[in-house]
Length: 144
Image 1 (cartoon, rainbow, N blue to C red):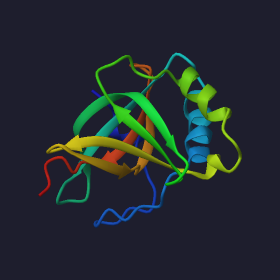
Image 2 (tube, rainbow, N blue to C red; image 1 turned 180 degrees about the vertical axis):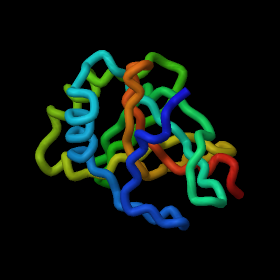
Image 3 (cartoon, one colour; image 1 turned 135 degrees about the vertical axis):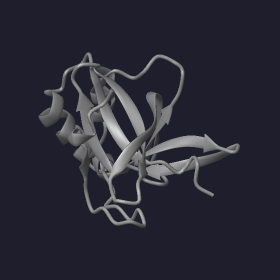
Image 4 (cartoon, rainbow, N blue to C red; image 1 turned 135 degrees about the horizontal axis):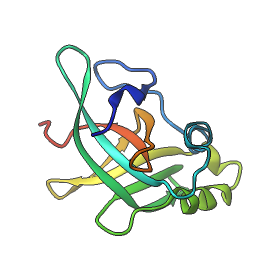
């Protein structure tokens, strides 16, 4: 099981108004959290906020695809069943980007009722035991 005490939430408010996470933020956190360990994989966790303000794990999935959208100035990460993206490959792709692209927002995209949902990150973490770098998003899969 993942330890949620490693969760770092920035700008938390009950309405899920969060400060956006940029590519450069993710690169820096990967460096400080796991020392750029190329053998970690990228994973996303949907977190459900409880009535007491604490978070619980709703679901987890590996990130298997990514797409940079220059028009929207966002990096979209897609969970999937394909081979997860390794941190080594992820950093290699990100470090090849322009300085301008480093300021793009990072989002996780998935489907809900056949609609694409683009969700902003609310935090980062790691599971050293599972060799996973974790991206946290609010769970809206079960919301109306």
